[in-house]
Image (cartoon, rainbow, N blue to C red; front, side):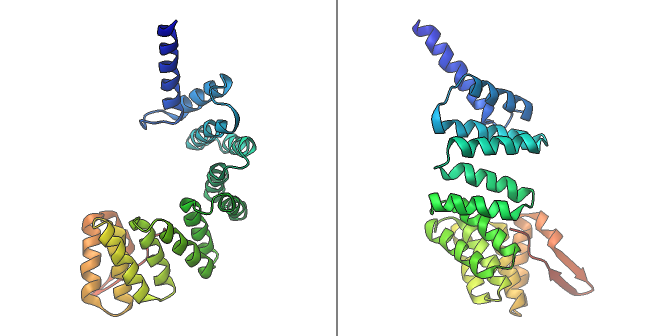
Amino acid sequence: MEICQSKLARDTRIVIDKCVNRDGKSSPPVAVQACTELLDRKVLEGYERFYLFVNRALAYVAQGDKQHALDDYNEAVKVAPKKAQPYYSRGVFYAAQTDVDAALRDFDTALSIDPKLVSALRQRAIIYLSQSNLDGALADFSEAVRLQPKTAALWSDRGHLRILTRDYDGALKDEAEAIRLDPKLARAYFLRGAAFGDMGNSANAVSDIRTAVDLDPSLDRYISTKGKTASIALPPL
C-alpha cells in the first residue's frame, strides 16, 4: 500500500509539473490536458484550485484560445475572490487584449486585496502611462520601488517615466541606481543615454548608448541616423 501511495504521489507531481510547465517544455495542449486532469481529480480543493485555472488559462492563451482562457480566469476569480493573484492574472490578460478598463478594474481589485503586489503596481502604472496619467504612473512606480528597492528594473521603469516628464536629473539618478544594482541591465544604460542626450551631454549619451547596444544588440532598432545626426526612441516598458 505504501508503494502504491508513493507512486500515486509521484504521478501527481508529474502531472502538476506539466500543468504549470515547470521545465518550459510542456506544449499548450499538454498543459491544458494536465490541468484539466488535476481539476477533474480535485487534486486541489477550495481557493487553491485557482492555480490550476490560471495555469490552464495561460496554456489556452498560448494556443490562441482566448475565450477558454477568459473562462478559466473568471473561474479562478470565482473560486478565490479574496485572493489578489487571480484578479492580477486576469488583468494581465485584459491588458494584452487592450481592454484597459477591464484591466484597470482587476489591478485595482488586486491592489485593494494586497497593496504590496508589485507586479500589479507596475502593470497599472504602464496603463496609466498609456493614458497620459503621469501622476498616477509615477505614484505606482515609486511605490513599487519603495517595496522592492533592490529590483533594478523598477528603478529603470521610473527613470523611463522621468524622461517623459523631462525630469532628467531624476532620470539619471534612477538609471544610475538601476545600473548599480544590475551592471548588465542594457535598458538602463540606454535610458540614461537618452537622458544625457536630451540634456545636451552628447559624450555621455554616446558612451551609454554604445554600452547598451553592446549588452543588448536588439536596442539598436531604437536608433536612427541621418547623416551625422542620430536620434533615439525610448524602448517600450
